Length: 198
Image (cartoon, rainbow, N blue to C red):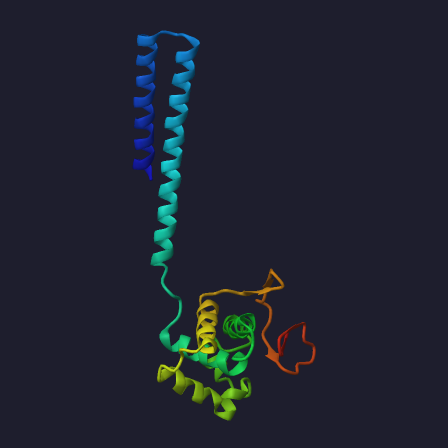
């Protein structure tokens, strides 16, 4: 960054020197001063643009180099539980279920891993009734090409990467305080599709 600033300063010095030479050769008429000022402004603007372009390039490379914050096993399990619990819901309904799982992972009141949260006794009915195992087998067999599975995997990735909001009626709805969902849930604070959340 320091080298870049030095380079900009050197370019500015060269431009200033050229402007001075132009004054000496052409003279100090109003037109020459105006031309010199425009040239100096253009050089400054190009230096600022170059600096801005470099910042954008750094941001893009950081995005490309950003590594996922989850394992393949976590993705497999999260996508499968989302498919079980919200496969027929909208994408936002799928996101909401994934966020609830992640909220539990980060809460002291629940286990601290995706696997332990999902397999916590009495919490997710697909674990008890065998539907989760069926979805895991589908995932393992690569039978995930339909739109339902694709949305479940996308929602799982976003939830695992820390997204804590859903889009609701065109606005972001912060979902980081929700730890429970069900079709029937007493004391629910929010309803989305067929689920109630609290």
